[in-house]
Length: 309
Image 1: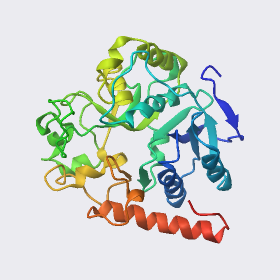
Image 2 (image 1 turned 90 degrees about the horizontal axis):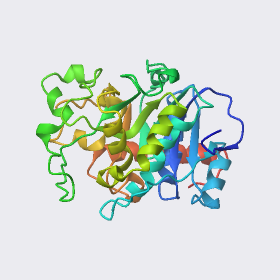
Image 3 (image 1 turned 180 degrees about the horizontal axis):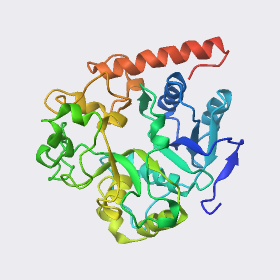
């Protein structure tokens, strides 16, 4: 394997979900993500992609639950970007490694701060460019748009991250369509959210990515992996509707609540801090959804004699 992936248990599947983890800060989220995938009856396993920094404590938690895992390199650009205001982005470059997993025909990369509310196995079968196109086509991978509204008014965010440039703003007049169709990939600034990526692993594409990581261009990328993908494959990715990567902020009043429909959402993404496992109460109803699922996970693990984490 060209991507230096060390096997950790046989995986009898050609299509998988993956999530990257580098430390235990996101481990409660990862375990609940795994539980939620099983709860909705997904046919496909979750494979955890861990880096050298992931500690023995984390490995023990995965092993106790029979969660498959693979070692991946900790990716960083050759010209670093200062992410002092968002240190989590230092770990995000490694979310590009699923493009290298050529032992699988389809990988759907998920962030560990997600929970699956409805089965979305159909992502394993949506049409993407075949590997032999080597990243030259118009359907290189699939993702949902990033929200550019900056609802918390973070001062270090790009000045052009405003509602007028957000792809979701263009869907306010057609909320029903927004449940099933993503705005065109070039809408607004044409920037995707890297939390969910649907990928046909291909060496040529991964080589393009790692080559870009070796250039000084990366010093201008404000959002690490998703900035790189949005730049390198501008307009050449398949836009998924928000329901597959429902950023919790979209539901907030005055952001994109006009398109959000609770009964349609398949995957909630708990962007920003605090995460649901970092607090006991929240005014955000979506955090209550996470806590409810987490309690059910705890009960299942108690029944199986697994120490809670």
